Length: 288
Image 1 (tube, rainbow, N blue to C red):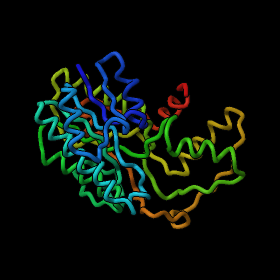
Image 2 (cartoon, rainbow, N blue to C red; image 1 turned 90 degrees about the horizontal axis):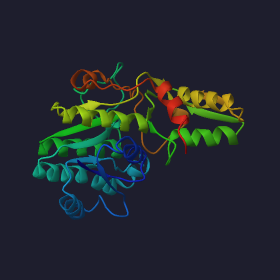
Image 3 (cartoon, rainbow, N blue to C red; image 1 turned 90 degrees about the vertical axis):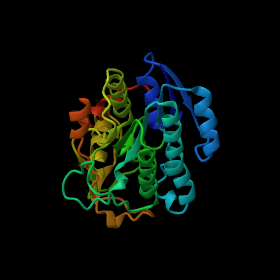
Image 4 (cartoon, rainbow, N blue to C red; image 1 turned 45 degrees about the horizontal axis):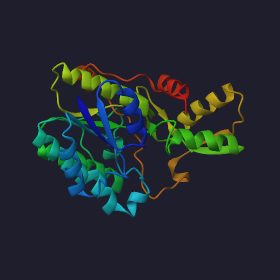
């Protein structure tokens, strides 16, 4: 089996290469080889590779920058997934695509289920929702996996930023009224590997699913867990102070509730992710 993965150095793409090693021939195309803003190049690469499975692990993820750069965000997050879906349908193969909690406005009091109405708050969320809709419009075999608060030991993310700032400063103020599930990119990749196994065994429950580590916390809670790990390792650590979102304004508004219900994935595919604290501990045990 040959799997074509868009993205190479991104958090999920890197973990996919580890999780899928030995399972299939992996062709991972980074930005230097595949410009997702160029639909014709996408078509050329997919047709040249003729994979058995297509995984779109690349995205425009600069949430605040997207507010002033929406054209680029929509080209990569909306147009490109539609083109990938068209090429996958033409080859008669599945497409696995990752989406986000930002398709919701965060006003719901409970966990979001896949059937809840979407209402993005900014350009990034709107571009990701448009990508979902483009894939659905093509139809065919697809899994759209919505995840949240992705981190790993590589790239730019909350975990690495907190590890650095907690050791550099005496005090750190972190938002405490946005709630969600920190999700390790390794957990996403491992679950994706399981989904591929289920597909090869005959599962065809295509559609949209929520894929996050279990449990919930705030950004302050996530930062506190990171601080606990630093203290356990005998490293210097700043004092954490919880603050409301109003004290940390950003160009893009974030949903206050990013909690996604993963029960549908467990029911339809028998795949579930570990608790976020368990995943964080596993992530921190990985070699850099």
